[in-house]
Image (cartoon, rainbow, N blue to C red):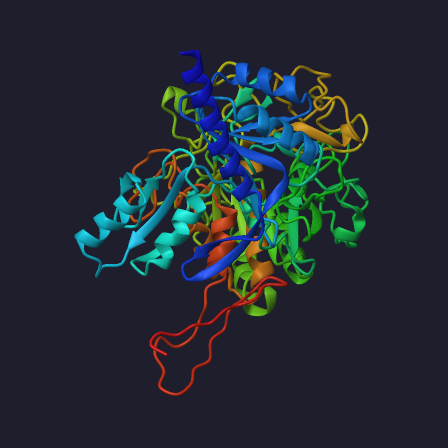
Length: 610
């Protein structure tokens, strides 16, 4: 019996040795349809396929006993990619594993000439031509002794026998003339087409990129309950020519994440108390910084957060007094008009009036200012105007809230913004649309913000990360109530979050409400206009609302629900929709087509029939 086992082991070793020797030679190739793609073995990587599920700890112990610095990357419980530090170490591991009886294949990881890594095991995929007979199919499969694992309209998946050259078999199928394609069932790295910036606190910005990570107070959300900002950034991070006016409590000058080079700080931009030419925040009034940071905080500067449109510019316009008290309505109208007259493309408004302010014509002077901005701004294309809807609901007790003036003005294209939460559900405080109301109680779109207030749902409070006033003012550390400035508790007074990092007191984790949702919509509007500045404000409205995601499991009729309006904001979908080609559907001799492209992009044209 011992001799039989020894002979069997010798046969296995010879088979694997010959197989591995063949695969380690160059050049090799596979067929992409009829095109030969040259591939070469990776210097330090091999891929193993086991016949049974392996104990990963046992396997790691075995391999590290051979080469302690080897890296193991399990593709599933049977397929393992091993990377050694050197080619010699890789060979040492391979030679030792030849003695393992439960291994179906040992291959190098191949590389294309462009550097794409391709792992292959004992499987290949192919599709027979429609004209091929059943007899021809059976003959070819029998010739190479393959096992059919899966059949579909698109492809068949087959497995070769132990020690059989899967690359050679796949190539032979292609060369038979009987198949449309045939190639190994490659394992290749796929990636999301997205940009993940190096900003220190970006991983906490669940509203921009939600992977289910823990970000605040032990909270985590549902994966992809976000606005898909990284995916949008593959197309644009904004254009410096696009200006977003933030009508709020002011923005700090030369903030480390928003320098004056990306602020349009103008004389006459303070409509509150103090110096009329200084739109800086006073005391702990950080609301404007928080809004502006979500829109345009610097990206990839190794600190702070990332704005959604980090290459666009902010025009700070202060509309609050230093004690958080409001200003006369004519001043609010003048502030809107100031933004329009000074070249604002977008006007972001995370403010509104109090309970009972549901008449859409409550203050005609403000209505007229908004109407003028949307019709005469941007040379007649209209300023894009967004308003937060209010934080008046408490769905936990059945209160649907109200959409308050000016967010409910009856002006086409004005974006009324509600809030979703970290799980793609309606935020507890975000009002619900009431189409039956005569007061234009309609949510157009939502963007992610915090889930609920602490007096509504225990354990909840603000959780959106953004900019803060540098130093020990603003929301970090969390302030106490002063005069008309009321601060929610919890957080507890003096809380520091973040409490470490570069300029950490210039950032906060405590923003929220529909106030945090509105600037996100304004920012995506900025990305859209960065792609195509010739769009009207109504076209931008349509792009944002029609590209939003119908999330939350609510009842959407013609793409609209009462809870989330057109849905949760999707930056990537909005920017993609902006790339639409325009031109004639049919032409006989010639036609003119236009497409708006980001810098560096190219277009490939084809026509059928030729």
